[in-house]
Length: 328
Ligand code: SER
Image (cartoon, rainbow, N blue to C red; front, side, top):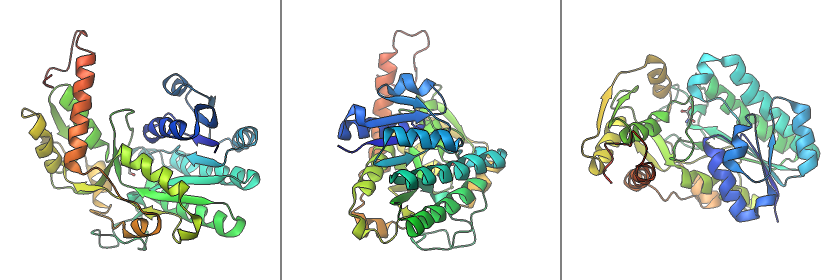
């Protein structure tokens, strides 16, 4: 049975990826690690505290557990990266190099999540192809574009089995994201379940690629299980599932929650970041090379997110302030 080690397991992707990996490979074969020990309680199972910027500790953990694959998910997201560029550089790139060195030493494969943020405004931002100039203008995007190249370097120079995807904005109801530009979509659902209204920091017509977390988790696992002979583009594959604007999201949410309101107070930092990213990426190469295919579009994702809000609302119906706007 495959052994896997997840770094940043307590984050938005990690929380759900760990569950999926444990279902697939067995509880004991998935070591969840995170800087914060709070994640231990949420994730259960084998857990170890780990700071990816500590190369020696990381190598020791990989030596002890001997994973077939390291899933390296620890990173600062786009908004936090603009506010704390040195920390973003240290975690997003320093951490990655530590992972790659450990993987090289212990012969592990590595999954590295890149992002739509690895592209920048110097190219046409509609249907951005797999191979397009990457001139990101955010610190987050710079660490992702450079990370892709460093992963390629470790593959070409040392034979490390590195693979990655360029994730769009990820939407989930399990763990909250933090510090990202596309987080507005998750926040909108959360606020819909709270006060029934959301003030969006992006203009109503800002279109970005998005994906529901079950598709994202499946993409990671399918890519790492794919036949390496088919993978001409390893780091990293464009993948997408849907494109929407805040206005489109609000309209879809109102089909389930007719009283939901979205208003707008544009945050120049977030708007500037979003404007520098693709409106849509072309994921045909991932479809060809490893059979990528999303299952959730805007309608299916919204229906599930609202159903989960309702479940949560009825579970907390005894609480003093239940979610009043979500009909039960
Ligand atoms: N979701 C990320 C962010 O908004 C982009 O990959 O920062």
